Image 1: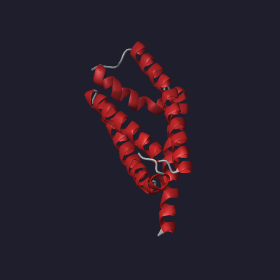
Image 2: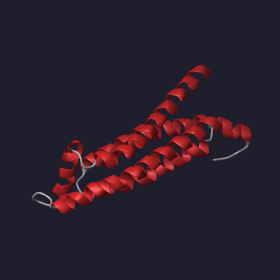
Image 3: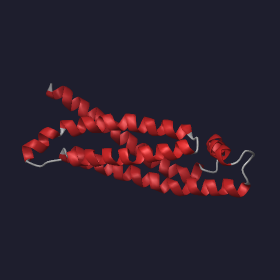
Image 4: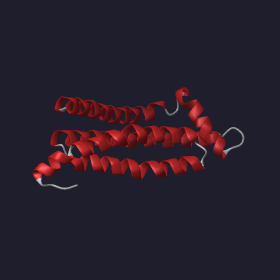
Amino acid sequence: MIQKQFSLRIWLIRWLYAAAFTHFIIGLLLPWISSMGLVEVYHQLIESHFWPQAAPDAARNMQVWWMSLFGPTVQTVGLWMGALIYLGNQHRSRFAWLWLMIGILLWAPQDMLISMQANMLINVWIDAFAVLSMIPPLFILWKMDAKNTENTGRSV
């Protein structure tokens, strides 16, 4: 039973590191790819909400600038996620798992609402995937580390 739980823990930690690394890499790439054809369909989806015809060039340039500016934010989130995952894993800290869950549950509804207001359903689906792929592993780790918290007398 302990070996099975240890294997599950390793898998969950690796999954969360992969999520953090993905955020870091996407954030690193966003400034470089935001003006490329790779994200053309995404730009058109956003523009279709604000302009019935083709968006003016200045609007596209501003959109590319905002997307580029958002990259370092996503990159930093990935870095912070990685640090909290490391601390949570090394110290069996429920506190780290709790703060990661709080951050996701604070961010996701707001991001989804703003995306729905702009009819950007692709963002809603991405957010839903993020929540559904990260909250269960974080919750399981939070529960697993309850034993460690009980043994040390700390609470969370």
